[in-house]
Length: 175
Image 1 (spheres, rainbow, N blue to C red):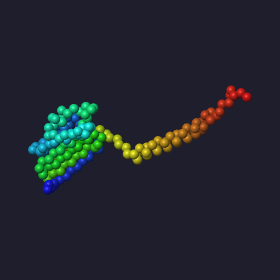
Image 2: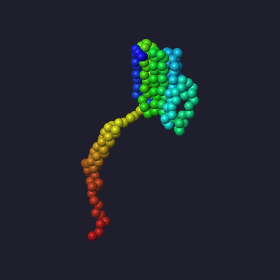
Image 3: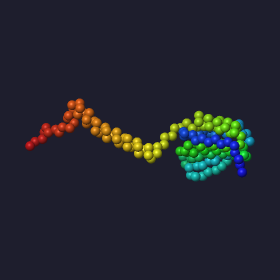
Image 4: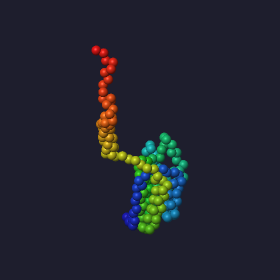
C-alpha cells in the first residue's frame, strides 16, 4: 500500500494553447526536480483512438490536422512512492494538475514550478461558459429592456410635441 505525505491539486481557470516547446519545458521542469522518474504521455484523438508513450518526440511528431485532432494530452509521472504527478490538457475543459508524494518540500517546489509555468505560458485563453440558467437570465433582461424601450420611445416623442406619430392623415381621401 502506498502512503503519500503531500498532495497538491489545481484547476486552471483559463483555457490553454499548448505548443511542442511547452511540453518540452514541462518535461524539463519535472526532470530537474526528479531526474530518474518515468514520464509518460497519454494522447487521445477526436476519433477516440489513444496511445501511451514515454517519448515526447513521438507526441510532438503527431499529425494534429483537422481529421485527426488531438483532444487530450495527459502527462503522467510515477516514481516509486516518492512522486505521482498528473497533468491533463483536454480540449474544451479546464486544465487539471495534481502532484502527490512523500517529500513535502520537493512536491511543493515541483508543484509551484509547473503551476507557475502553465499559468504564465500555457493557460492564457479566457473561457466564457454560460450555464442554462445564466442564458435564461440574460434573455429575460434583454426582453425587459426591449419592452421598456417600446413604451418609452412613444412617450418621449409625445413629450417633445411631436404628435404626428399617432395622427392619421386624411388628406386625399374622397367621399
